Structures are given as C-alpha cells and as structure tokens.
View 1 (tube, rainbow, N blue to C red):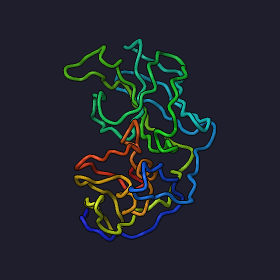
View 2 (cartoon, helix red, strand yellow):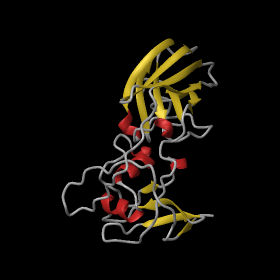
View 3 (spheres, one colour):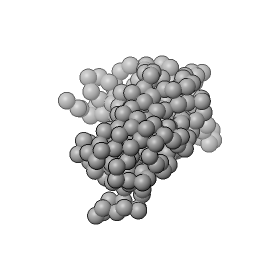
View 4 (spheres, rainbow, N blue to C red):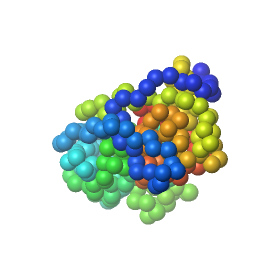
Length: 245
C-alpha cells in the first residue's frame, strides 16, 4: 500500500557527481562520489516479437560515450522501412501506437542487418539499463492509422549483461524547505517518489532527499532528452527507486 509521508529512511551510496549549480544561492548537492560507468562492448540484446511476422534481433554496444544499436536478420513482411525506438518504460502488451511519450530514436532501418544511429550515454545517466524495450514502428507520420502517427510493428524486451550501476542509491527525506515543498511518497519506509510543488527548485529537492541533481537525472530517464533538466513542473512525479527507473 502506498502512503504519503515524510521521514523515509536509508542513505546514498555509489551515486554520481552533482550537476553544476548556476550560482551560490542554490544548494550545492555535490559530493566526492564518482559514478560507475557502463561496460565496453556488447551490453544488451533482445529478440523481436510481432503479430505481423516481423522477426530479428537487436543488440546494444557501448564505447564508453555512445550507446549503439544494431539490428540483425530483420525480416519485414509488410514494411520496407521501420523506425527503431527505445522505450524507457515497458509498453502495455496491447498498446499499438508509439508516437509520443518518453522514447529515444535510433533512426530508420530496413530489412537485414544494420548499424543504427548512436545516442550519448549521458541521456540515460550513463546507465542504459533504464531502457526496457526496443520498439519498431512504421515511419513517423508516413503511415497514419487513425490518430496514430507511428504504429508498433514489433517489440523486443532487452536483457542487459550487467545490473544497474547505482544499486545502493537511496533517497531520504529531511523535510520541507523553501524550494522543496512537494510530497514524498513512501512505501515500507522507503522513499519511492517525489511530487513537485509550485516553485520547487531541482537543487533544493535533491538536497532535501539527500541525493544529487545527477541522481535525479539517473533515476528519471523518462525526462528525455535531458534527464537532468533544471526545470521542474508543478505536479511532476519524480521516481526515487533504482528498480523503477
């Protein structure tokens, strides 16, 4: 059962450095902690499933800076081209459209084997394990189906070769401040989410929770394309659990 209370417990370990603060009036949440980095080489893969006969596999590789996606033995019975999109939260099984919401584009692809566009690892906090699926869709806007601009033709659940890089990252609520007046959601004594209040500042929210601005970006890859963006929106729900990033 989810309750809305302050005073959640636990500390922080293995988290990354804070983003730079614009001036001395902001709370400095930087620490000496250094963020671990994703392995080099092949780090994730998946097999496509489809109701339209699409088959093939997908692979992720990293060079330490870029996350590269490649498609292998892709069979497209009814399409000449698809768009490859990464989903940072699992799509419901019955969802047929993927033309909005948090997603990361790896460009168009045809049948066969292809190396797709790379994306900077910083967009996923240096840790791509927040990507749950790769979705193949019809080219955006070229095959409109009703109100949908990108129809799903196949999806692949991604299995990573490594666990999330900040497993010990925990938030702890020290109480409201002038720039952090939102509600902290807790479950079993752990902080699970923060609901932004009007006037909240990301540096002060991070300080209240005992984490860094970088940690907020890491935990919220759904804030693409800039998870560490400084602007918080009234009512925005920030995830505070590594397992839910």
